[in-house]
Amino acid sequence: MKNRVCELFKIRYPIIQGGMVWVSGAKLAAAVSNAGGLGLIGAGSMKPELLRQHIRKAKSLTTAPFGVNIPIFSRYAEEQVNTALEEGVSVFFMSAGSPKRFTPDLKAAGCTVVHVASSPTLAKKCEDAGVDAVVVEGFEAGGHNGREELTSFVLIPQARDRVKIPLIAAGGIADGRGIAAAFALGAEGVQIGTRFAVTVESSASPAYKEYLVSSGDSATKLMLKSLIPVRLVRNTLSEELEELERRCVPAAELEKKLGPAAARRAIFDGDVDSGEVEAGEVTGMIEDIPSVSLLMARLVSEAASVLSDFPPCEVFREENGFS
Ligand SMILES: Cc1cc2nc3c(=O)[nH]c(=O)nc-3n(C[C@H](O)[C@H](O)[C@H](O)COP(=O)(O)O)c2cc1C
Image 1 (cartoon, helix red, strand yellow):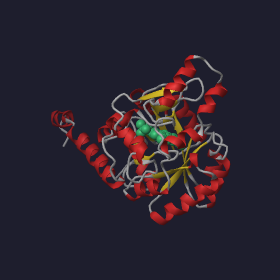
Image 2: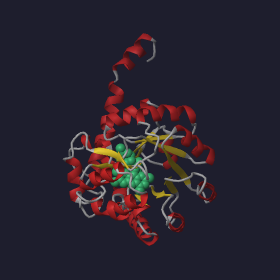
Image 3: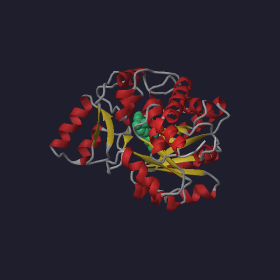
Image 4: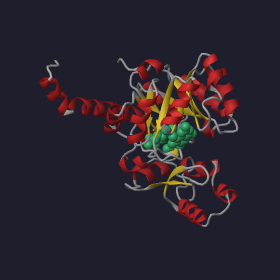
């Protein structure tokens, strides 16, 4: 397939599984890579030694390329980068921080570097910092989010017009229709999070997966814009947070309710009532818990069908003499 994202990562399909705290360990990343996409180990919830173990495990589960996602705001970011380099990882998806911080050193070490951006302006800054590709993540996405509130529908085409490097769309994509739409808007690849979190190989707890399946079409809300915006499924904790925000309590009081422990409680331990249930707006489109190989087959065949079925293509070709 002639596609810059496939060529950059040496993968069959331009589908990337987003790095996700408490969700994307070695098992999920390797399953996605084995199915022809690019799996990412989400380092955000791992101390460096645990990251090392996951990288080693992923290598034992797949011979296909995989990468790591490192949120730059993590206090372990530098150690995580060094650990991944020591273990021979050469694909880095960096997020939540300046693209200038690690890109020069990673490029000097011969790595492929991608950065996540939430606006066309930041996408351009990533290009200027020397990354190989940029992920533009829209307002619909699960987990931590930009403050710009740009939905994928307006973010992707504007970013396409601003950067020349390969463009990967994230946020709001859960099936082949979403992939086809992202490509129509100018993306050359997609990064999918929430849909992969609800698969057999995801390390999220069964309770988290079932909560998302049953959550309905309007379950999530972008919370904590006064602190660090994050998209959560509504529950008792989110109601408490909303109440605290309404009362304009100091940031420290909000922080006490949050942090890695609250995300772990919901996603990994399964306390979906009092924990931080990070997930994207696509939860309303998720109705099952498939294996990664089944999901990948579905994504690829749906996208192919949508793209080839677009009737105006046929009419346009006939009317304009294209074969
Ligand atoms: C549970 C969860 C945890 C996430 N953790 C991270 C993370 O650690 N680092 C990161 O860059 N993005 C994180 N994300 C964002 C995903 O990598 C991805 O960009 C996003 O989920 C795409 O939007 P979607 O959920 O609509 O597919 C997370 C998303 C979810 C749902």
